[in-house]
Picture 1 (spheres, one colour):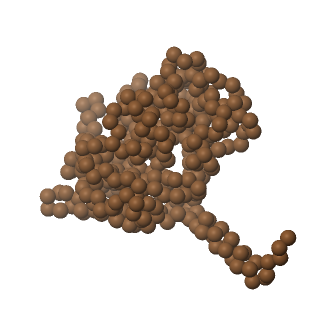
Picture 2: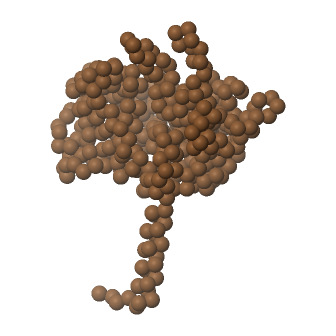
Picture 3: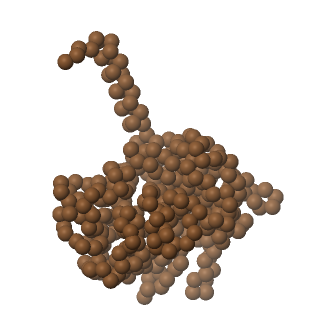
Length: 356
C-alpha cells in the first residue's frame, strides 16, 4: 500500500471537501422576468388571465394562467370541474410600449446550457421558444420559455441564472397582444426516443426532436419557486418525490427503464430481481416514483388509483377512466406509459387487463 505524504493527503482532503461543497450548493433560482408578484401575495398581478365564458357568464380568471387543471369548466352535478391541463405558468408583462407590445426581457431561471431554440413561430403552439438544460443531482432538467417576440441566445450557449434569452411576445396559437406573456415550464424529459415514438403513434411532423413540448413533462414550477424561496436548500428531487401520486401503473419491464436511469433519485427500494416496475404518477401524468417489483404482468396494468366521486378522466387529462377506486388506463394513458418505458409500439386497449 502506498503512503501519501501529509501535504498530498491534505490536498486530497481539501479537494474532496470542495467537491462535496459544490455538490451541496443550493440552486440559484430566479424568476425569468422582472415580475416578482408571485412572491408578494398578488397572483392577479403575476399570472396572465384567460377569457372564460361559462354558462353565460364571462370572466378573466388569473388562475387560468397558473399550473394544473385550470381551464375548460365542466359542471358535474353541483360541482364545477376545471378539466384542461396547463403545463406551465403564464407570466404577464410589467412594461409595454405605446402600441401595447411587451418590453419585458426573459432570462434563464438557473445556470445551464441552451439546448434548443425554435425561431419560427409557426412550428409550434409555443410560438418562438427556448429550452435550457440544467444539471441537477445527476439528472438533466429542462426549463422552457415560450411565446417570445425574439430570441437572443443560440444552442450551446452557457447561461447563468438571469442570463438573457430573449424578449417577451405573443407568438404562438391563440395569443394576442393584449394577452402577451411568457409561458414557463420546468420539466423532465420523457424519452430520448421521442421522435420514434411520435412516428409510431402518428403524431405528425416533429420539428423539434427530443425538445418537442410533448416530450417534456412539466411540474408545478410556481410551487417549486415558492417552496424553494421558503427553503433555499430544497432539492428538485425532494420536490418531485413529495408530489402527490394519483395513480400507479405496473409495467412488464425487467430492466430499469431509461427514464429511471436518467433520474436515479426517483427509484425507490424494491425487488432486487424485478419482474416488472411500478410507476407512480401525479394526476397530470408526471412520474413520482419507479419501484422494482416481482409482480408478473403481461401488459401495463393500473395497480392503484386515488378514490374519487368525480370521473377520473376529468381529473387526469383522460389518462385514466372510471370512478371511485375502480379505474382503467385509457389509450392516452397507455401511450404515455409506452413513452416513459420506451416500449414501442404502444399497447392497445385490447391488450390483457390494464385495470384494477
